[in-house]
Length: 111
Image (tube, rainbow, N blue to C red; front, side, top):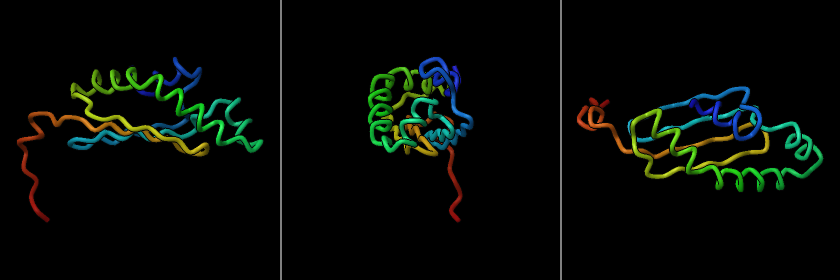
């Protein structure tokens, strides 16, 4: 299941924008427009810290599911998973993964 699909199922809607950057041992997913209407309303009324606390609690609850999604999509093992939000405009999910064998043996020329 793609990352935004996982968000849709668990949060009721997905982000308006998602970008994934895959490196040799790190995968970064940047999400924009991921707040629900209720979260946006709370943040606009000055309760942005409560929105962030709720998001952190949710991320802690969904951590294993998110790791499973990354591992299934990439065929890599996730060694560490980090997630953080700004109430507006961005959320970031970072996975530190084992390096696939083909990439581990590849040499990168020095600049």
